[in-house]
Length: 69
Image 1 (cartoon, rainbow, N blue to C red):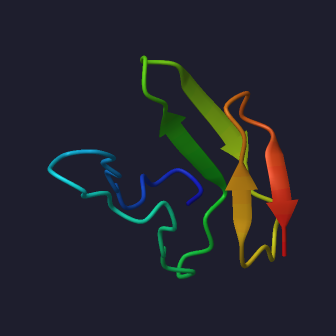
Image 2 (cartoon, rainbow, N blue to C red):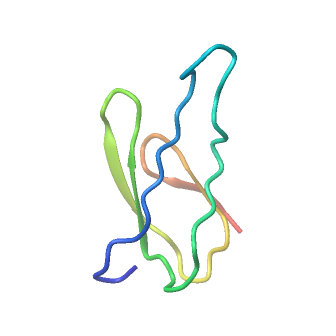
Image 3 (cartoon, rainbow, N blue to C red):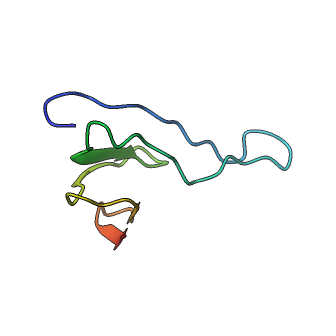
């Protein structure tokens, strides 16, 4: 959020027998987030700008914002 780093979330898939965490993560809107940083499985890292006023975004592995609501 601006110059300040925001919350960190880790999403795990397949960490146990028949287990997987949800891919949807809920973040605070105060202060409004400006970027999202993702490290994908395999180590690829992408940083994407979050459009002002966005309430929901989906990010593809290339770092492109694929959905904005």
